[in-house]
Length: 456
Image 1: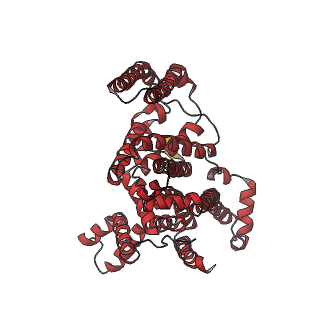
Image 2 (image 1 turned 135 degrees about the vertical axis):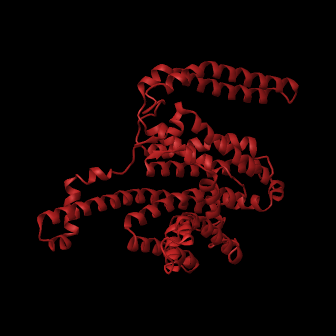
Image 3 (image 1 turned 120 degrees about the vertical axis):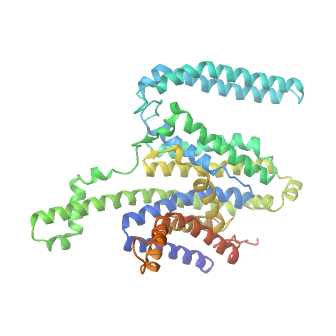
């Protein structure tokens, strides 16, 4: 128990800070922060097993997050029959052509030795395939996007329960990671970072501009979710009776029936939001706990020790007969799959898919800051980093506004400096996160909870 004392202390502190938000702001806000901390924790677990276990620099986290969000649309949204009628078959044919191209290229690479002939064949397969895709998909895309573009304009999804999309999001991200890994993992660390970042930008750009797939920048709203809707709870007898019973002492002090009913209605509205967020918190916490147990088991298994040996000295591990390339590809796929799950969780929590919101600052570099602050190579540290940095990211503006108003209270409300500082309060999050990272790097260069090397 003593060896976990620092971990327990750190988590108690961050949970107390979130509780203070509930006390001084609102419990709905506190639970919103907690849920996003859990989602961020899943992302940091994925990034940590790539960087902390194997030393792989993946700056493409944004792309895999977007793929997880796309999976929610493809799985949970109801299909659009008219769109399928005018272009669905053509788009399925295009998918078949892409799969055929991949298998043909793999066949050529296996059966023909490296030569000009092989290069010409691969080039011909790609060019012919692209030409066929253009001919078949062009008219189909135009027809699909013309189907009630204000509301649909895309094929829709499978209409399945949204929880299935979390699994599909992981699989979709893993599939893309396999292709990216085959191409990019042979690159040197700095080139790998650049390549993964650019590939992520390509993925997001495709999602943003292919309206037939997920409406592009027009967004998809009203997505299914695994928790009840607030408006439904507010009209449910058992929930109203429960809130009335829990607040009976407060309500009994009100003599007027009208005031009593109005107060009860307000309590029901507030409680419905908290109840829904608690439902999401339970689901997200379950995912984090499952991933933590699996990654901890993997970290201290023979496979985990092998991955850390490869991370510390690739040449020595290669000399010992370990297939470094294969193991790098495997852990790259696993980490990306976890990030894809997190992306699906986030879109499920939001209830909408907005491809335009996927930016490197939020979905790549902030995640890396979380891992570095928490402690690379330590799963507990990576999760803690997700909590700490996201808490700072959200609460930086309210804290900055509080201190600005405190230190400028002696100035007139129309003072130019005071007004400028108040308007700039939202941007203090960058200052606080950057300052926090500098402090951690200065005094705790290995993170708040550094990796513990266990001698066997």
